[in-house]
Image (cartoon, rainbow, N blue to C red; front, side, top):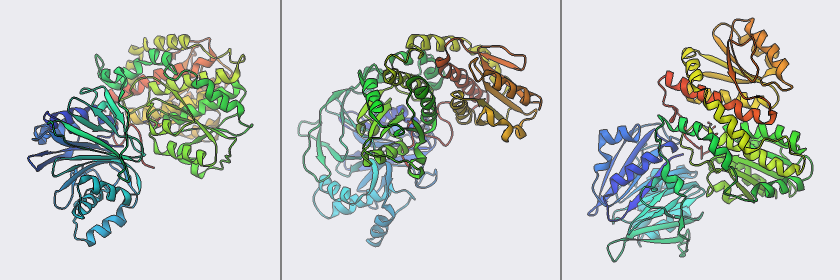
Length: 595
Ligand code: M6R
């Protein structure tokens, strides 16, 4: 995913755009660029690297003018090069565009434009939008008419902001986020409220299939107009955005990732509080569905939460749910109809694979209940029931507090399904206290990270509901610390992975004292006999562990939540040991809005 931003108003545009881009950098951060318009002349600077680097090298924030657009990129079409960085100007320089998403028919449009004499200097699909807008502008009318003609030609899922030579901005939204920040005589057009939260807390959520224009108004301020893609006028409400977005700073923490890990004791207490009745509504859908017709889906960390849901919902709610990885949804033998229910888990609510799974479910007539953190996300808008994770903005690319919030949401839905039978599920206060206890052990985890700094292979093992935690632990180690890590179902050890165990390996055993304990200990001994070092994540000490990471005991259903916290910390501190930036892992973006 990328971030797009536009500004038109009384102040200098470039510094505002650069500040907004810094705030949204988590969305994609391989290259960055800004274009402004001043006195009918466009200025454009861009480059490969993080916002601060490119700004320092190319003076993005010094560009002149009170109108401008900006972008941070996560490469999809074309490599990470300056030529592919946004903004992209049209052949004549009459239009510049920043874009998030995919134009599916870009090759066909490009061919027609090239045949008409338009030239291209990048490999991106974005340049097709700027050239198409120029072509449609040359056909007569102004920016609005050009937008209507161009939008009718584009296929795909996208949001973009275009800047025209006369200083008009135009922005369109089709299945990708676009929000207008409404300031005093000023408008900001952005992928995310974080792009403008420093300027205003008044926002308009642009409808899917709408576009807006912002042009110089009669009284000196900017004027906003909203249209459907066919050019018919539309009206949208101004809403207040949550104040919590304004607090999205690292504060005393070295990184967002650490801040978000440490926010978990509070975050788990707030799950669902912004959507009263949603857990009960989701549970009612599940209870009303025929046996075998409830599915749960997600990607990455959210899929690992879906795997936990399978165990928790059957064990504590008596309902069988089938987890399906969202990217596998189109290729899986899913049989859905009007009686089926899909539970969709997604922090961002913008992950293309998850949205695709939800769309397929809706098409089959099924009901969709989603658990999201971003309440105005595309997934939320397309769901029958929406439960809020309510854990506050998660900026670190690695999902941390959203995972524990998802696990809590699963508990709440299950409690409602079970009515009277969910007594074994932990209360939020108990989960919160257990996480706080885990966070107190940070010094030990830091020391363990130092010891592990040269490790190249880590295998994480767990059985039953602890296997998804092993998978999530391995994911954290991979993406934050760039260590080869695998989550393995403990019982599979003898069926292959044992061959990999030797002195160079660390094996992390997720091993609380429940029914999985004895078998996992046996596995640990087999691994130790091959020379590997054993880290036991458990509420009980054992002589087989070279390092014991103690978790609170006593509450079986709370184990999965507490087990992951020390591994999140381990992956974070290991990233620091390896001089990796934990907030912005290489090659990744916070949410993957392309399939
Ligand atoms: O926003 P979502 O929960 O839909 O994101 C799904 C995955 O892309 C995400 O969990 C990803 O795997 C994280 N980087 C994991 O830390």
